[in-house]
Length: 311
Image (cartoon, rainbow, N blue to C red; front, side, top):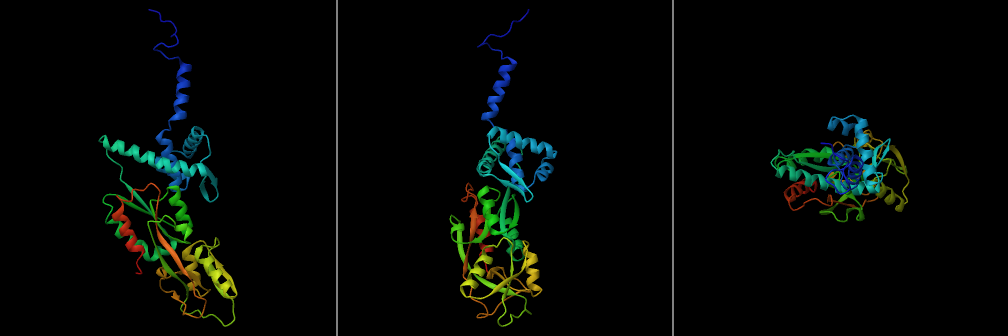
């Protein structure tokens, strides 16, 4: 029997109607694979690394991002030589994307499928990697059960940005009071001048400073203290890398201002009275906005016990 064309309101849908329905559906429903790609790019800091993670080509990952941005109607990522930077919209979408994927995975697990291994992402300042990293892994690893602990080392402003953007679950950071508002726990530590054991400051000479090019909080604090004391200083070495700055100090080039709890041999603390006294700096533990801190309480306590220890 020959069938006629379906009438409006009939049970069949024309090809054009199907395309319109699909288009409308895409505008209101975001595929989770696009969100996973976006979150992976943010966490790994690279389109290429995200492609390797999902066994995709880089053009495929770029296509995922173009489609996601088309659905949302806004740019999410700005690519630069330094990696990827989120736009304001991207920062907000990342927060929601992590929640959506978490709920999605909980539903999948509840349906009886094998759950993915949970990952807890923790950030610590580069400065503390030599003295705290192994202890953090040991203490935190003992309370997270089957979860994996991932560590990111960065300077404190970078860690705080990563927390706000949802890249990290927990971070230990140091900064001024305003930057640490909303922290789960805060305390303070002395800032001290450290140097090589063999370095001696010549009378009347400018204070040689070893600094970061982006002037991290301890650098800015030290310069302000020297300015108030009318002490001349000069920056004799700069490097983003903490180990490079330590090497410069060990070579006898000058001083680095750091928290007392981050001092490690062979560097030593300058004797009182040689340089102006530095103030205390605020330190603490911060968490991403939607972290279940009640469930994570044992991990948070173990983390704080290590980073708030003088040892």
